Image: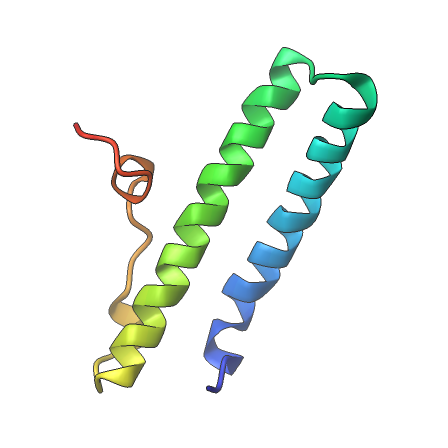
Length: 84
């Protein structure tokens, strides 16, 4: 599968994964995170879910002959499965 058109999304995922690992590592070394770090970790997790969802949408559209550029970032509430 050619992921060149998705390179920006994949780079963003890599950056977010690195930040998530740093925060989780900090959490285990210090037995917890400061409140602002916990908030940031949650934000990173949601952004990762949104990125993965966007990537799946783009790949599915490509696979079925649709325009992958029509894929859109879905709201956190939808990606996370929360009810409005």
